Length: 263
Image 1 (spheres, rainbow, N blue to C red):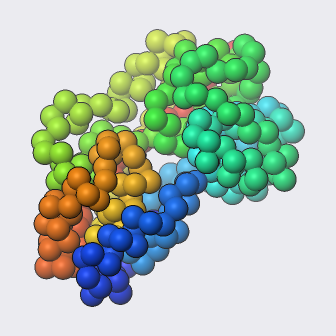
Image 2 (cartoon, rainbow, N blue to C red):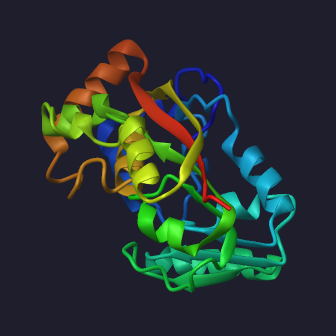
């Protein structure tokens, strides 16, 4: 998904059926959103997570990237530490990350996104994670060496809920999840000191209905069980809105958290 503003999608003149058929057939493995270039845009957080992660990786001696996806973010770091390990649970992403990261000297471990992490106490001086499904704070604290750092960009509360609630209706309880202040409390309860916590609301636009279908197929937790067939009526309504207004606007919530284990 591109970060700059984009004009109305050149695909918008295509038929509804053509757009959803195309978006329903393209592969969605990995964490590369380049298929959405020109079809959707998302503002990027001001803190520059990948840059900050790269700076910390360059100073680390042993690092762990949790829920690495297809490894694309980690592979973008200019320099990896002598010991670099990444975990991932989804088999297509494990294969993709292995092919991408092994040539860079990183080991990819297939691991369920649930505790315990398959590593010894104090194994890493840096743990990173971009958009974890859930942060297991006690496990993060356990595998960090004394003085070690956890650096993570996470999805904040009610992120892209304009899309979610279009398909699912109001979600008042879900809107209370993923709050930055809750992450701080959980990190501190696990014995970590939170040294940075920032959050932002970022404009996201979808310029054709195919972009929405692709997004929901890829980010499967947004509308659980999403299929074109089951949601065709709501897709038609959204398609009409995009054709009328030029885009469907939503807002992405992101927060950055950095925590340290006392020396």
